[in-house]
Amino acid sequence: MPEGHSVQRTANDFNKKFKGKVVHVDSPQGRFAAEAKLIDGQVLVGAKAIGKQLFLKFDNGLTCRVHLGIYGKWRFIQDIDKVMFGQVRARFYNEEFLADLRGPTICEVIDKKAVKVIENRLGPDPTNADPRGIQKQRFIERVQNSSSPIGILLMNQEVISGIGNVYRAEILFRAQISPHATGKSLTLEQITELWVDSVKLMKVGVATGFMTTREERLKKRTKKADRNYVYKREGQKCLRCGGLVSIELMATRKLYWCQGCQF
Ligand SMILES: [Zn+2]
Image (cartoon, rainbow, N blue to C red; front, side):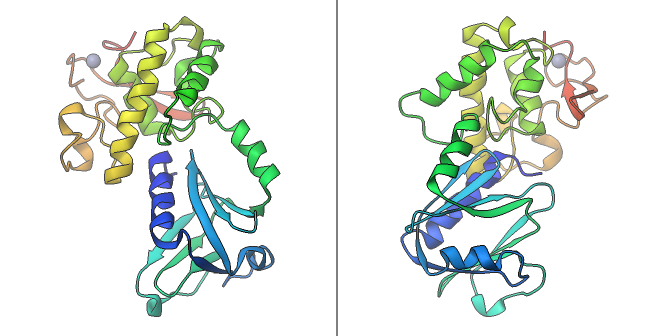
């Protein structure tokens, strides 16, 4: 499943290619055909990502909401003569560009009120601009008031949007915080650091498309096996303390961490 940085990249792509222009929308596969008609031929006001959800806002007040889930995929095509058919749920296009959506968990057209309800439910997204620190404050409050382990809170989209398994493990390692520490037990400084570091790491992810988290490699192109401190490195030596990296299940997902460094 994509983490939030990749959905942000899709939003950026949409803004670059379609924002302010008329967009045609249809559904070659048919399942989205009736809803596609509601936004076909409208101008795209803007694309926005919150966590793993993408919102495409049109000038008739309607929004197309997409959640890729596990199997969903976007495909952007420059040469629209090379259009591929098949199980395309939704197709967005103009004279120059085309974006095909296949296999999403959610693809629906909703009104402003429904968008607001979803936005209020979703936790703050570290990849979105936060000039007044409101989103940071929302994160701090949600963590401070919870007696759940921080390893679970970081995966809860109502606490913070867009963090998945890779960033969860890596952000906690970098902060040297145990995934089992409860939200309540963390200091304000620790919680603030988790937010600030999420912003920093996910910015790298949005810019490069890679979830690099090792500090000395943030600005370099690095092969997959060398991008992270603990993610998928169970049984190998911790790069910081030399102990062995642990793996366990937390809320059904594999959790990677170093017991020597995180407490
Ligand atoms: Zn360690």
